[in-house]
Length: 171
Image 1 (spheres, rainbow, N blue to C red):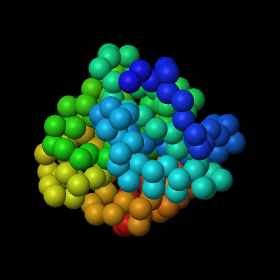
Image 2 (cartoon, rainbow, N blue to C red):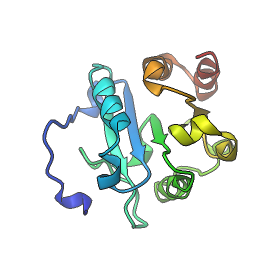
Image 3 (cartoon, helix red, strand yellow):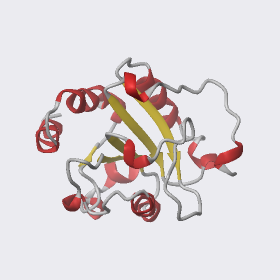
Image 4 (tube, one colour):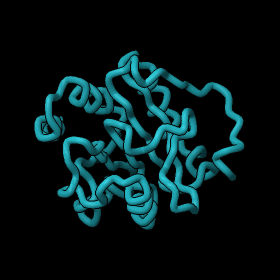
């Protein structure tokens, strides 16, 4: 399904200049596959219920062009947080392609203050995060909806990437 012809109801589009945190929720597969998962709907509603946060959704399409959000076509790189939910081990290939095509360094150690924080969760990460350590700035092990507000709060109030990641370690 082409991202250019989607017609949806109940989407949320916020003026990015009126929020503190831009959150890109990424499902590293097609729109059709991603929209069947309950986690996407929970995070989308939860994050957009916050006045200080705009959450927009990203899916992987078979294209080398940068990932753009469904809601406003916001480039993935423009977010403060890029969150991936991995359902299958092979999703890492699409995660890497989404980062690379959006000019976000693939390796966490190469990211700077100007790059979004890449947080990875989902059943694959809960089972075994080790194969993915080079690509994520942080992991969410278990139920992400239990810590999502603390993650956003840390980014909203943190002064530096290092400080925010230090706060994540305490969650």
